[in-house]
Every structure is written in C-alpha cells, then in structure tokens.
Image (cartoon, rainbow, N blue to C red; front, top):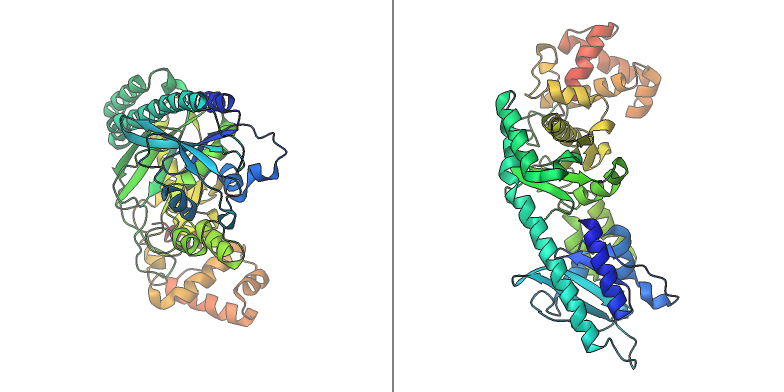
Length: 431
C-alpha cells in the first residue's frame, strides 16, 4: 500500500511541478516527493520536521487547521508565516472519501508575485487526491473489518479453536496473510479502536488478564497486565522495515507534555520552550505521568512469517509491554528481543509474585532494602560496585544486606537463594 501512495504523490508532484507530501488526518507523514531544489526556503523548519520525524506537532496541526482545511473540498492556500517556521506559503489539497477527510497533500506555493499552479493542473491533482482518499479509507476499513478475526486469534486459547481462528484471519487477509508481520501490544488502552494505524493489517482491542505489582516495595500498581490493550498486526516488507514500524507504534502513545508545551510555544518555537516540548514528547507519558503507575507502554514481538506463530508473537508483545513498565530504560516502546531476563519473567509471572521469602521485603515499609538488594544482585554481588551505584558506604551496604537476610530468611552467599530473591524482585516490577 505504501508504494501506491508514493506513486500517487509522485503523480501530483509531476502535475504541479513541485514536491508534494502526503499526511493522514492526524498529520502523520505517509509519503513525500523528492526535494532537489536549491531554494533554501523549500525546506523550512515545519516541512523538515515533518519529513524527519514523520509527524507534525500539535501546535503546527492546530495552526494549519485554523485555515479550514478539514472542511475544505478544494485546494486551500495558506500564507507564509516566518515566525511560525513556515517560510513559504502552502497549497493544501484535502484528501477526502465520501465526504470524510482522510488526509492532506501539501505543496509549496510560489513566491509572492509569481503565478501559482495552473487551475487545470490543480483540478487534475485534486482527482489524484481523491484516489488517495479512497485508498486511505479502504485501508482503515480493512483494518476495522478484520478486528473480529484478529481478536478471535488472540483470545481463542490453545487447541482447535485457535487453529480455526488463525485460518479465518488468514483467509480474510488473503495473499498478504503469508507475509511478514509483527504483533504489537499497547497498554493500558482506553477502549476505543483508532480510526487508522499506518501499516496495520488488523487492529483490535482485547482484555489482558491478571493484575500486577509495581516497583519493589510497592503494594500494587495498575499496568498492562490488567484492563484493555490495543493489539496491532503490522505488515512488514522485510525485517529491515521493523525500525520505521517502531516509529509508527510510538505515535500511538499519548505525549502528555507536547500539546500544552508546544501550544504555549507556538509552531515556530525555539529555545527553552521548544526543548521542553521535545523533552515532554520523548517521555511517552500515558494516562497520568511518564513515571506514573498507569504509564502507557508498547511491546513489539519478533517478526513472524505467516500467521501460525501469531498467538506466540502476541505473548511476546504483551511481555515486552509489561517489561517497559517494569524498566523505564527499555523506553515506552520495548522490543521483546531486547528485554533480557524479562522474556522469561513475564511468562512466569502472569500473576502477582507472592513468594513467602520475599513477601515482607516487598512491602512499602522496606522499599529501600528491596532496592538495595536488587542493585546488589544486579551488580553480581560485587559490594564495591553496588555501594557506588547506591551512593552509600560499603558498611551501610553490609548492614542493609544483613537486614535483607533477616527479613527473607535467605542466605545471600548461596547461589540459589540469590537467584530466588533476584527473580522475585524483578518479577515484582511486572504489571
């Protein structure tokens, strides 16, 4: 499908003699024409950011929508606004299907005083835009239409029911069912299925079993192991296409800091305000805060060819999403191949960990002791490294480890006791 969009964008570029870009209605880049101009104004900050990050900020979106592009049925001319980072005026071709806006084609307008595109060429370009609108609408409809089949695969359980569900999804996907796919889990999800997910073969919302514990020492924290999750089946042309797919997944996560900061700063903001907006966007904040217990995360499974391994891939995606809550260093989008021991722990700890030896240590009253024990074990039992990582004196470390042994009844000089405690501490982070 991406190749079809690119061909159509190139057709518009040829008709109007200017490089065009195509964005969906959420201002996420789908395709763009080649930029071979020596004109410095051809790549202003807004256009450059759109191409490099494949999306626009909330402030830029609001600014352009202020010109009525979402309601327009024909080309819309938007003047230059250097203060907003728009050095050259734009021509927006609304991409519609059955009266609903599906996206926008953007072109740079001519400099003031120079004639714009020929009306006949603009009319021909609008016809191409309508063809793009049909494709976008069909893609969204296909993903929605397959939600029931996709959901059945993820919830059927094992055995013949699952085999039948996989066969039904394969039949619905047609020849594309035998291609390369990656399963994605985004959680917690509010429940409404998004209208479009670029590159998705199917999208659905599914319940996730279980509850979970938070950081070591916390009694409980809600997270991806309970409530609802968004399941996405991404099409991949090759394993090399996983990187851009991860970028598409990241766009599904709310970015609580960006809209407010970017709106305050304005489309062309620079300096500390723009940096603040960028920093907020990078946190991947969820329904509360980036560090809060309800932080939305995403997990991506290893790519699979065909659909026979899709249920196992979904389990990988869920595990990766849970690991992203447990360890923020994995980022808001975690790949199953990159989560280390959580690959095993997430599958073992589908229910909250309640080992008798670690139960007392994992209460809020002993949060600092739990953290000390985890850092010590992370450092392979090397006291010097652990004390430095914790910023405490080595004697303080020894005192705390003694208290850990008293509370757990474990011997930290014994390998199996260390393994048990380390697993319990790590698994307690899994939501």
